[in-house]
Length: 129
Image (cartoon, rainbow, N blue to C red):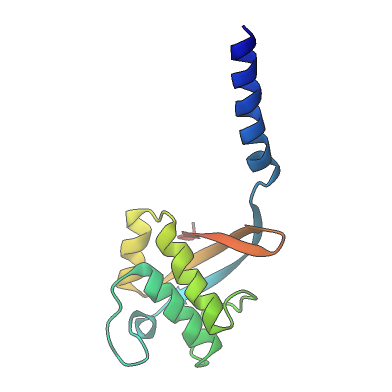
């Protein structure tokens, strides 16, 4: 009985900090993935949704290339933050239908940025509607 109590207390102690540090939605932005977003700055076709999302933000922030539906975001204005975006997308889960849609281009996506205390920890990419 005492051992069961200790195991329960230990489990609670391990879970409580994670629950206390739950992720918050820091913000969202809309992006239109156009044909220019499917290629890097050297004209090479990108091969992953993470690369395309990163290029979309580089096109928007660095090169001034935007399409109808692209929104400004406060997160990915510099090269290091865009590298972090690619890393977060690669480390997360994206439903296959979303990944396929991004790779085809000519579509809108919503990017939700989650984290804690202003630090981005993961992104969620969804299709509108």
